[in-house]
Each structure stands twice: as C-alpha cells, then as structure tokens.
Image 1 (tube, rainbow, N blue to C red):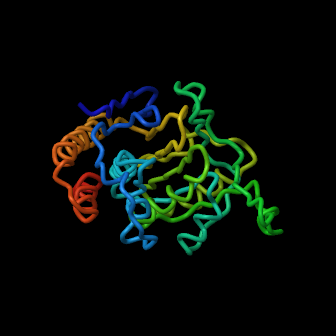
Image 2: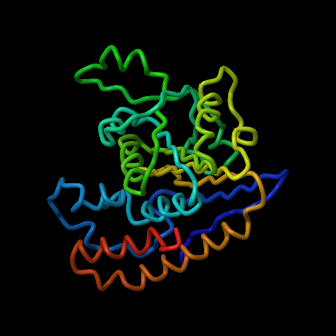
Length: 273
C-alpha cells in the first residue's frame, strides 16, 4: 500500500490538503535498486536527479511530489519561489525573476502542522563561505526570487536548487489569471505579513513542496485554494495512488536508466495534466 495519505478539508471557504511523510519513509515503498548503483553523467538529460529530482537519497517520491504539485495547479499561470537556493536557481534557469521580501516558511524538523508551517516569513538565502558572498549577494540576502514556471522541467530545477541544505521548500503559486501577478508581487513585497486566505483570489492555488535531505526531517505537501476543491483534488490523489502502485509493480523489471526514466515520466505526469 502506498502512504499517499492526504488530509483534505474544507472550512471557512478554503480547501486545504496536507500530506506529511518522514524522510526515508516516503510515499513509495519499493524503490529501484539501480539508484544505488554507480552511474556517471552530469548531463541533465541522463541524470535522474536533474530530470526528476530523484537520486539514492531523494528517491522516487520526489517525482510524485512534483507531479502532484503540477496537477493541483493545472491550467494556471505558475510562479514559484525556491527557498534557500535562490542563487543556484538563478544560475540553473537563466531567466528573469522578481525579488520579493516574503516567502512561505516550512520547518521540516516538526511533524505537526501547527509548528511546521508558521506562514509567511522573511526569506533566508544560502550565502557562500569560500569564496565569500559578493556585494550583490549581501545587498539582496533577505530577498527571495519569484520565477515564472513554464513546465515541469523548470519546477524540478527549482526544487533541485533547494536541496543543498537539510531540507528545501518551493512555494508554487498557480494563478487563474496571469494578470494577477502584480497583485501577488504587491503582497509579497508589502510591509505587512501576507495571509494565504486573502492573498489567493478565486481560482488561484498555492502549493508548498518540502523535500527532506536528512534523517529527522519530514517531507510534505500543503495545498491551499479558495472554494471547495475536495472532489477534484481527491480525484488527483487517487490517480497518483494508482500510478504509485503501477510503478511499484513494475520496478523489478527495470534494467536500465532509460527504463527508469520511462517509468518516472508515467508516474509523475498523467496525461490529463
């Protein structure tokens, strides 16, 4: 049985879906042993970490988390904040971004939502030690970057950029109208702490994807939207449960990384999304 056990609730006009899993005990129970075999490729097209965020530490469940986030925000204009790994994300994507002074914080060391999700916080950015930070990095050390996300490959790259610490989080905003970006920027640059209940307009969806990198952390997905989405979101979750079972049933047949890539693609991104 998969452990893709979401808590989905609707209250006060807001739907929230929460999933939490202890690092090393994720939503997939049967992993491909080939992830533990040596392989040499830094080319993104041939490395499962750069293609799917999957390696022998952050395993196939990462592909599931990212696929779910993509499905929950389907049909919307996507923007994302990679916490901690801002500068690595800038280098990896090589595209425009907007500075913001708020990001949604998740503390992956806490297993309960009250403690782990304090809401929006001042951004924390990883600065280099050797050589030390540049003047530009020092000047913008308390600013996060909001990137447009055009495809799942870019969402994966943003997530990978956060995985240099004990854990990493990506804030994914799915806006029903691309014209709402300026409204979002105003809130994320304001002097007052934003609140999701007022930040999200009708049709918008927010997803916080948190991936652990070390023992003692807890991975999670938090999905929030105005309106009642319980039926649609439950259908998405059920579809991913089915795909997880199909993946685990087939995992012993994989012989090459090409086999893995084909299976991860089917696992991560169902056709309707």
